[in-house]
Length: 125
Image (tube, rainbow, N blue to C red; front, side, top):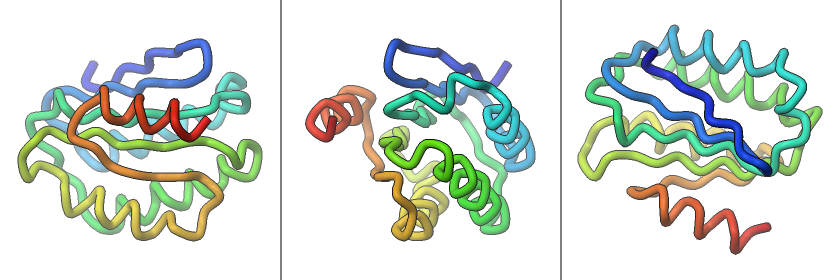
């Protein structure tokens, strides 16, 4: 499966691998809304370092922001770092996501390593 949820004691590490489509990502995130654990997490790491292709458009990003805005109503204090491979894969989409989430209560940021994302989480908690 190209998207795997790894539930941790205080958060969720979402691992994205292989070729991903925007609709697939949205479907996965929408299913999270029905998982009671999402109401108590402190962070959600979106880790795209294993992705080889992302077939998504601006409309997918805007829909993702809408989904996460709804999730923020039940858990407004989530830290939401996104980890990208150290290349151009997905950078414009993640930049748009970070820009569109500026008005949300969630803190969002993007990184090139899981280590840097986790450091940011520890500093922010």
